[in-house]
Amino acid sequence: MKTKHGLIIYVGKAKKLKNKQTSYFRGTHTGKTAKLVSEIVDFEYIIVGSETESLILELNLIKKYDPKYNILLRDDKSYPYIELTNEKVPRLLIVRNLARKKGNNLRLYGPYPNVYAARNTVNLLNRIYPLRKCKTYQKKPCLYYHIGQCLGYCALDVEESKIKQMENEIIRFLKGDDSIVTEKLTTEMQFESQKLNFEKAKELKDLLDYIKVTLQKQKVEISDTVDRDIFGYHVSKGYLSVQVFFIRSSKILERHYKIIPLIDEPEEELTRYIAKFYEKHFLLPKEILVPSIVNTELLEDYFKISVKAPIKGVKKKLIEMANKNAANALSEQFELIQKNEEKTSEANEELRKLLDLPHLDRIELFDNSNLFGSFNVSGMVVFKEGKPSKNDYRKFKITNDKNDDYGTMREVVYRRYFRVLKENLPKPDLIIVDGGIGQMHIAREVLESLGLTIKVAGLKKDDRHATNALLVGEPIREIPIDRKSNVFYYLERMQDEVHNFTISYHKKLRSKGSLESILDSIEGIGAKRKNELLKKYHTIDRLSSQSAEELSKILPYGVAENVLHFLKERKEKDK
Image 1 (cartoon, one colour):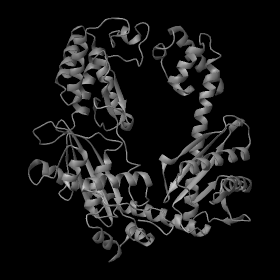
Image 2: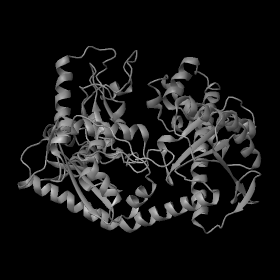
Image 3: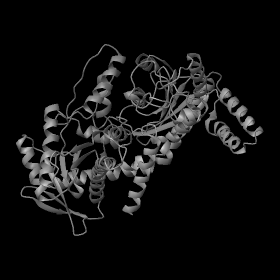
Image 4: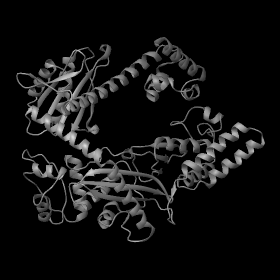
């Protein structure tokens, strides 16, 4: 579906296109659907051979065109998984970005409720099983070998059968069978207690308590240990609430929910949500249970796994439980969601009218940072339909390292919109520069040289460095902003977002640069060791928070102590 400017604003599929289109243009609509219908002036359709092909094409077109009325799930929360690597001597890692993982033989377990729970589990297993800890093999056994948490794989021959046994026991634990680990800890605790080593015994007892309390999740009445995800839904007042339960080894490991405006029929929206759910953040389980409104054959064909809509028994009860939780989530959050939607929509519309724009869907904001005249950077944030689109944020390291705001603005605007033209990226309806008239003139000059016509606005600050006017037009004029208006809060939010994003990048670069110069001043740190420390720790704060034992993986122990002592003295002087 397209606007009068040819902009694609919605992509959907249908078995009977006429019926689908008629449903949009007959009867009354509210909320997002009404807004969508008011903007449609044209549509284009593609005929395919099957419903599965239709679903695949729909998802690919949504990904390609990013239509504003399709939910992209870009802000969905991600959960950590634990990976047991497939190396000769495996390691335990915590991973979040599953999209980067390649291959079919990955050993990933989860999702875990949070990074803290995943890290505790990894620490527990590393405490019990002397797996390899180093990313690369060292020349000689490190500290982990000397404290009994590694078998010295870098220097010693370890029987393959011993490694395989550890792998099997770890996999059993991660799949929910904690009997072997519990038995090992209990035996060790009793042994330490008999030796009157009560502190060590207490430490082991705490680990046992962690397994019993933290890892023993809510049991469900199901006889098998198949990994499955349960989807439930609830529709009310123009919104679709989706609830997902992750069941692993007959336990509810975690749940996830999402509330989205309802544009299409509930069955279409829910099917699309489930299809997109596993694109980035989550692993496919062995089985998915869904409500009866979902087309199970379509999803089964798409995922190539079992997708069922149970009609009775324990699995039906699980669906009903997910539906009940979806209804509860929507009931609790409806007013807040609706209020935020209305305020954001009103503010965006008010800004559009102030600037006399035909539409205002995408805003790109720029800010420069050159504290102390070094590490010149610029940041760009993007707001779509009044909300930050963090996947579209961009950082720019400026080539000219001088305190020159105009030069920085010229470079960053040229680099950004030359790339937009070159790669045919979406163009914004509005560009906002966090600066005055001079910055606006520079931005306009660059855009004109590239043959682009995009509205540019600036933000004027008062004596207290607070925004008090919008700069627009040709010649440039000031539009005063009421500090209690929705537009003011909207602009302030965007301004804070781009400022914080840019300052964060600047601090990171400055910290890395400072760390590099500090390491040059410490005896025992040569070019090779400096590069290893920079590669692993990046910033002064991260390096100074390490222990001498941890740094001794890269440095001799004495040099590691010197580094920490030097950083501590420097910190005290800075105070």
